[in-house]
Image 1 (cartoon, helix red, strand yellow):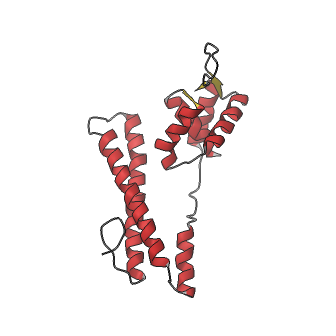
Image 2 (image 1 turned 180 degrees about the vertical axis):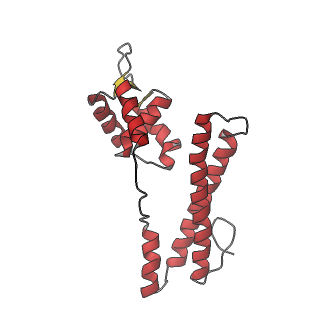
Image 3 (image 1 turned 180 degrees about the horizontal axis):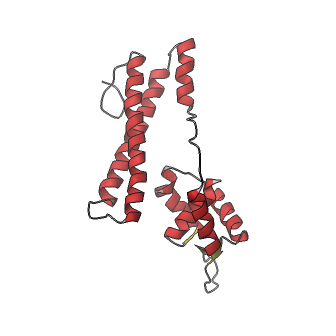
Amino acid sequence: MSLPHAILTALLEKPSSGLELARRFDKSIGYFWSATHQQIYRELGRLEKAGLIRALPAAPARGQKKEYEVLPDGRAALSAWVAEAGAPRPVRDPLLLRMRAAAVVGTAGLAEEIRRHLDLHRRQLAEYRAIEERDFPPERDSAEDRLRHVVLRGGIGLETFWTEWLTEALTAVGEPVGEQGNGRA
């Protein structure tokens, strides 16, 4: 149910075409809520049909992209969703299950998979820190910026957790751990 809310959020930040939304998902919202271009376009149609968004009026031109904006009912729906109670979701990660299975069948090949995950999380952490440095200087202190920054800090915290935990996991399977991207000493 959250994809429509992610789209409403993005459109309230800036009216956009479907293509622009897809690009923005790839660069920001997609870090914590991913969607394919096809899913975004399908959801735009649903939101428009429901009267939550509309295509901005534009002079008809061949090949021109529709740009969408949020209508008052869309803003109200998003506000209601923000205020709803929700329960935390359990973590469902195949790597956790693989590690549990390795306790029963042995760890052959597991260290390499852990190293691969460690490298991916280290890269994501570095990317988040670069975004933080670039987009959140101390003088950016509006309420909106503080909320966006706390979301990014959540991502930094999660990636920090994963890099520390995966380092511990490598040690648990008897593998050397290094600080470089491949996890090897």
